[in-house]
Image (cartoon, rainbow over all chains, first blue to last red; front, top):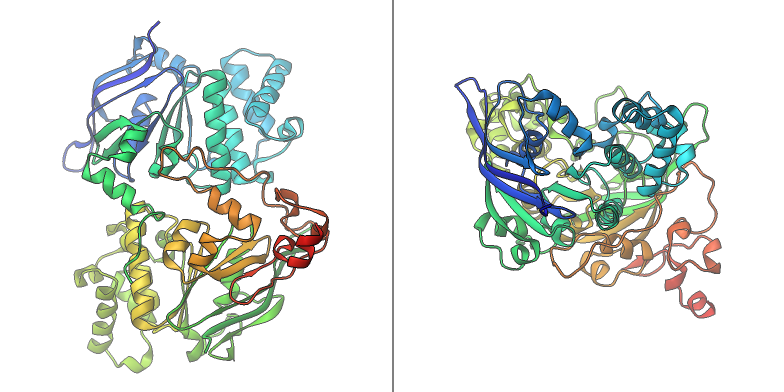
Length: 266
Length: 316
């Protein structure tokens, strides 16, 4: 088996607009190896979330997609609905930016964590509950038994994001797409989520496609980083090299915009 | 002379069926003309409650707010007194703080003080503020949906400026924006404060951003200020373990730095009855003395921590 888990080649996406199709992605290529965290950096509108959505076929209707997507040795075919259904959850799972929107406010955590396991994995109620507790332990949520009986409003943003990650891991996906998973969180909580993703990678060999606007978040987490601008990959390199000697002016601008280093002219 | 003075502010909420929550517990702050005071802390620490009191939008449970020595009374269903219009606020989300169905100009004109004149003069004055925040005058006839987030936030700043404020209170003004528009908005704010000699209370959970902008930084934890001082000094030599933890949690763009250090636990429940230092439960260096609550001590750079108190420090 090769080490390549995901390969995106020459991906282009056009969305319908009032004056004809609008290109949103152009000639995007990237690969994710097994057990590797790959970062996608860029600002809003740069196409980073679109890339994630294309992988899971979550694009708006009428979108035109061209290029090849290879996942786990097989080609992803968006027209084959049954195959796509099998890939979602089992193969590729996703964690979104806002955990308060990702979870239903009126259903208990237990219900939300076990429902999809019972449907997709065919587990019994007891099996699903045991698996849910195991998952919550994996994401280091204190007192998982009690958490299952609680509701989303009883948790903080950081805890909810851990629960959302647990839910995404339920069907043992090979690739986790994390779309700005820490943007809505405090820095102290963000540090905890980054450590969690890194340990899931080292312990379970999980591959992660980590989408962010902050290159600093990727510095110690991602092995490889792709910088997106205007729907294109403008720079793609091992993270350490990209940060030490950014080749593209846009990468340099992103680094300069980080408040850490920049100075405000007085 | 201090422009805005908050003395011993307390804010309480009474959620139905629950205990009283003391969200802000005895906070004092001053903002001087041309000075930016940064207030940082995690979500739930009481920053926004304090901002609302400072802007006169809600009543404190204790303490008082003074603008140029005059007490600020909380806004009810009455019109603001002329002097109090000097307090203007910039909110986090420009998409909801501007009216989507009115043009930019008509919203700016709302805030123009009556002594500016009438008709044409008022309009020219409003357009002047628009150019001051770096937007073209042609923006005036357009609607909010025609702008990006960063542009909208600059319009919101222009809206605050037309009222000729003495003090701007900015509650997480760039959190909803992209990094590059963040930089622009921060630059606009910083220039305005220097040019117009207004004071600014800049509230953010982003310590790195506050470092870049503020002259003075105050760090808040569970309703109290645990450390305050000149920004560079506080950053280079953080005295409170909480401030240190916040700084260490900021991801660095240096590939050799390793993952940012996570602070154990979560911000405690503000409704819980508390004894001793509030940060004790999460503090890596807590010791016996922390069972008593430390007071803010120091001249310029103040800190509320027993570790920094020489007598107890030696005793430990």
